[in-house]
Image: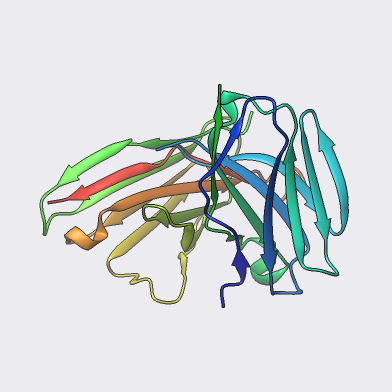
Length: 113
Length: 117
């Protein structure tokens, strides 16, 4: 079993839809949770960063963490074609001085006009 | 701020040759840089952690003699793929930690696509 599970998609939605992206994990030592956006042939770009359980909102993006269920989510409101990308969840604990990130496989999202 | 660059963005080399990839933090100092490899439709896999002025720490299964890492300054780390083979063809991405604050966040470069023929 992988430490982090993420549905690879692809996920196709119409413009303006609310998108829900999710990851589950098995390592209870993970404390910091991140969402990255990666366009084709580009490096990942940090979108959201949360610590422990709770919600965090930034513009059209909302990140949720439920540590009791080992489940994290990213919601995108009013999705735009420019949101079409692969979304990677990542998480870490304090192992290795807090350096080591464990990534999900990424969910490919396509927002259609 | 927190911009990381990589050079080259893509490279094609013949089997048996060596290739060097550079990773630079442009507007911050990074005592720690990371090298990842990403195969098509797969996630990023950490290869090694590079600390300025010391030897890199390699993940299990990564050959340190094949993937040479040098982190000679606070803004530059290099990855050299020695005696490259077609199975080394992949997307190599570096990241750097901004040491100015308490953030552990990693900022990623745009990646280097290596094709070994």
